[in-house]
Length: 296
Image 1 (tube, rainbow, N blue to C red):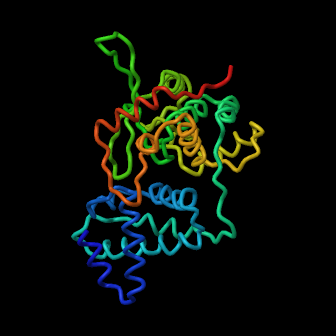
Image 2: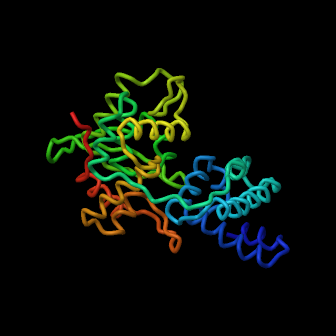
Image 3: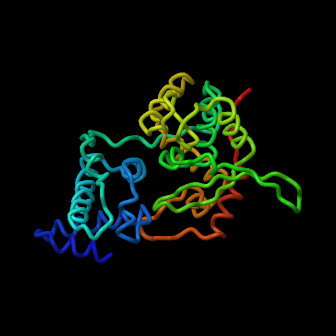
């Protein structure tokens, strides 16, 4: 990316140049950014998702994440100062202010299949049941769940078999749309919430707060903590832990690493792989055979 080259060349310290290039390129790869203007499409939740990735999957402490966010923040500032780029906001700045030093890396926690069922059994509202059935059956990121629109969840009749199939359109990194298969239980939980419990709202997001506004990441994090406590699960579970739970379950079922990577929409540090139809179909087949049910 020539804009990154220009930014790096504007720095004075050779060490800073080297580190900033590595950190920013890693972020661009993770976020599937191949055009500088796509940075303008990212929000705070996208930066938070990257920070959580560094914490939970790379075991980075906040005191090592902070300079990486500072590098990204500086790149945003550089781009915003040049009006020829379509960059009008700097989400990295807001996340940078929230980072605090940590003494120890967070333990990689996840729910076993039995704990997942107990977790779902302790979801009280239709919104909780729909949202966390979706989380635990798809491994979606928080940013992907809260950006879902009413039109994104639908069913079709397959002419050859006259059977129903259920789908959801997911906005992956870089605003890339991926069609994913849903199992019947997840689809029906979402439909039940939309038809019978969703607040009226001017917004078209599937998941709406009690005030009629789109759900925020902080609210979901708090809800996960409440349900975990209600369920008597003695683990430090976060929303990201739910994503890790499906990855662990699939791995234990013998699903190959590339299949899990496709399901989760992961970006490898070493590649900028773009998901193609065959990979999506392979991921959908995996998801179609995996289901976590709420206990009756």
